Length: 435
Ligand code: NAP
Image 1 (cartoon, rainbow, N blue to C red):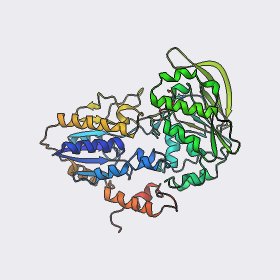
Image 2 (image 1 turned 30 degrees about the vertical axis):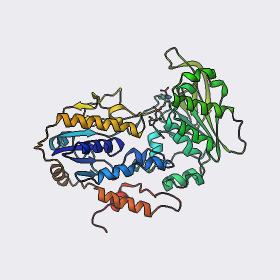
Image 3 (image 1 turned 180 degrees about the vertical axis):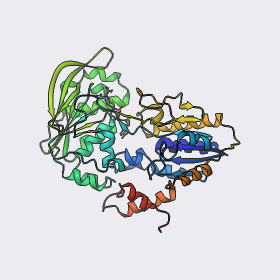
Image 4 (image 1 turned 90 degrees about the vertical axis):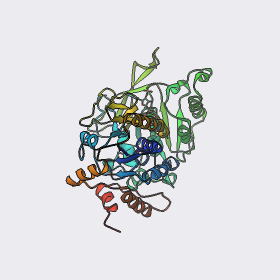
């Protein structure tokens, strides 16, 4: 029996476990610093995208397979070191994702009111780290920086009416705050043009069906229509949607507007003690296809600025880290002997949930080839002894099932669940000695 520890219980971690199980002869411990599993499915995927979140049922099957354990509330680098994991397990796989916001790196990006998407998304999804974020929603103008799907998620969540959250699992604190929001104008800044967006058609199309908000695009921002033919089919569909938004006359019946401002890069955020405006520079595409500043600037009012420009992985003591890449340098997933990375910890923050599946299979094959069958390591027994000696109490999958049952039982009428958002509440709901 080989012993494998997977650190991180999001999609990349579970797909790796699934792939390892297919090979057989393996005992797997999936660790997570939080007391709940599923990572980005719980804390990243938007609460109004329940059909995407349903993939958690597949991961649940993996977690319930004999030989697999989930150990939440165990923090690599704090409760256990990488050296210790490598001592007890034949292989360790980092599936820790990329939870840190990349900074805009412009003057004023640290002003109150400027929020990274990991924080804003974490806030409306009930991530314990962001329960107290309290984003400023009492003024009219918000600016979102970035032209990816996360920017669309943030814009849509800001624009929805309370009724449009029916069936979601948006947490009560965000639902109430958004219900009282005075944000009416949401501007999405893209430093390049419509042909360079990283938004996918399904997500973009949703903006055309909002009850109280209408998208607005300047027809002058498009290249000639004939050039769309050179785009790949998905991108072409997205650009068609943008062209349709541009061709639709303003809908006076909808009080909120989501404006796409292309060829526009933020160069400073200003305000007296908190953000009140974004200074934007007009750009043009250079011969390399990248944005070049034109020197022309203008100011956009904004009390809330959400930067949706990508993420990085945190350094972990004892693991090589590339500052420029913001992740662990690796060769097709191999970081060092018996130490692997999958998902965003391996590739950076790109791709959909399914993109992580081949990653998991590739690393499972590498482990099968590199690690001999007869293990002499202690695996779970060793880790359990170590954690007990440190007073660290893991939250097991059965404990998580109690947490989940409590969240579903607490759901407001018409909602999927009411997530517990405070660590002590999560730990209390999962306690083993209460029935
Ligand atoms: P993304 O797709 O990489 O988009 C990042 C955007 O930020 C790009 O438009 C990029 O512009 C822009 N950007 C980067 N640095 C910037 C800067 N300094 N100033 C201005 N703009 C800047 O990242 P994401 O939106 O965070 O999404 C991450 C991944 O999750 C993606 O693969 C995405 O598709 C996926 N996701 C999927 C869904 C879904 O399927 N429903 C939902 C959310 C996320 P350039 O192109 O010019 O670099």
